Image (cartoon, rainbow over all chains, first blue to last red):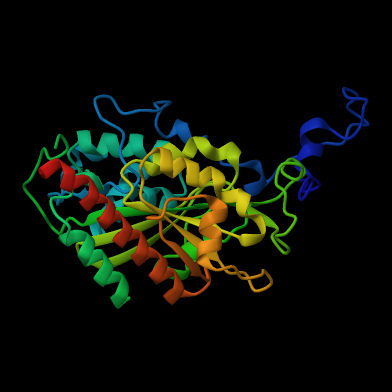
Length: 153
Length: 201
């Protein structure tokens, strides 16, 4: 396999450097390899093309995903799970994770992670806490705690 | 609480999460500020300014700035086991403003970082938070080679409300950034109290 294309400017690879396209003998074959080629699987292929989860409001970036404690040997759900689903459950099993953190950890777009989390909620493998909007905070004590927490850092 | 379908197992505490936004012009130090206090390496998607970005991203006055944040940064500060503060850096360029509304929803407050050499860069952010009644403070990032102005001069130049705190800071310095964040929370508390009072009397 030739590695001639490595490091080639993307613009060149896209548009070609010579004006005379179509003559196989003379045309340079620019190819992308490894990371330069982009993800092997397009992100929304992992969600089978879905961009939203039915019946759910959008998950906030700081909504926290918590894994349900599962009975080991519950393989029923596992058969339909993709590796990414399993990754999410495993990450959340260690510590509850925000949606933004999961996207960062898995290096997936937020939109994809939202759909995958929606699947896991449907399967009752995880549950999600909705962050309390500041306007709905019951009292100021939480904000006081934030201030003293910041001071103590 | 439509998500709480199965309450059978609560393995660990469910933390209360809050977020503070960090906004401001391109190259003003948002990523640096998030990185100065975050306990995790900030999640960031930075790309070297390309041919496509060069005419759009004006880097004059920001010497040594070769990359720009095109997605978003975020950092995490665990204040207590059950209390976590997230910092989100908003995209610096106007063409990524579509991401702002998503970030701003439910935010506790915001820091608008300003560079006195390019004060006009933060006008857009100031407008944005004023219009949406999101409590914000101005953090004047004191760059080493920029002239210093008193906070009041910055307030006048930005034409902002008396109540909005203006804090001089160094985005690289953890203690300085902590003070900025504390002033955001205090300002948010004051703003919430101001809303509450007329309602109860």
